[in-house]
Length: 269
Image 1: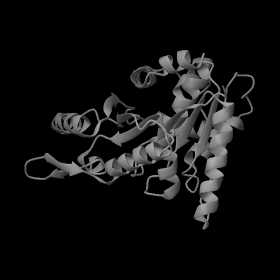
Image 2: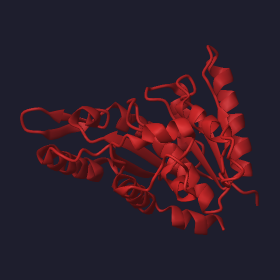
Image 3: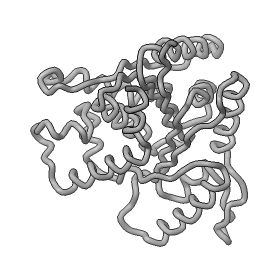
Image 4: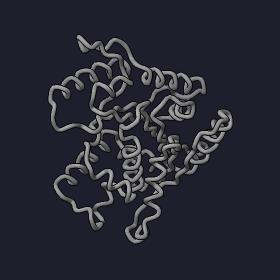
C-alpha cells in the first residue's frame, strides 16, 4: 500500500497570528524526530514561510551545523482558479506520496486555495492571538454579556471543509487545535475572559485548546537567520540560551507535546 503523509494545516483567516513561525518550528521539530517533511506555502504572495525556509537553506553554515530543511513548494495564486487548484492537487499528491508529514501554511484570508488546503487536514492548527479582537474569527460575542452568540466565518469554513472531505469519501474527523499564541504576561482579566470563552466555544464546535508561543523579540531575529528555537543547541553566535530563550523553548516543548508529535513519529515509524 502506498504511503500517505499525515497532513498538518496551519490556518486562521486573520493575519499576524504567528502562523508561519508556528509552521517553521513544527517543521524543524518533525525533522528532528527523523520524519521526512514536505511543506506548502499557500500564503505565497506574502511568502513568509517560503522566505523563512530560504533564509535557512542559504546559511553558509547549513551543512556544518547539521541543519535540516523541508521539501518546500510555494504556490502563489494566479488569475486562473482552475489552474491554481490543479497545481495544488498535483503538488499535494506528489509531496504526500514522498513524505511522512506534510505541513501546509495558509493565508490570513478566505481564499479558494486556503479552503482546498484546509480540506486535506488530518490536524488543523489555528494560532490565535490572546485577544477578543482575534477571537472574532471564531465566534461572535455579545459585548454586554460576553456570551458567544454563534460561530463566526472561520469556524463555518472549517465545517464546510469537513463536508468537502466527506464528499471525497474521506473521514470528516479532523483534530482541530487552537493555540493561544503570543500570550501577554499581564492583563489577567483578559486572560480569564479568553479562557472562559474558548472553553465554551471548544465544546460547541469541537476543537481543543493548547498553549502557543509568547510574544518574544527573538522570533524576529530567528526568522532572518533561518533558525528556530530548536537550533540554538548548536551554540550559534548571537543566540545565547538566556533565561528568556530557555522559557521560549519550554513554551515550544509544551506546544509540541499538546499537538502530539511524538505519537505522530511512532505512527510513521
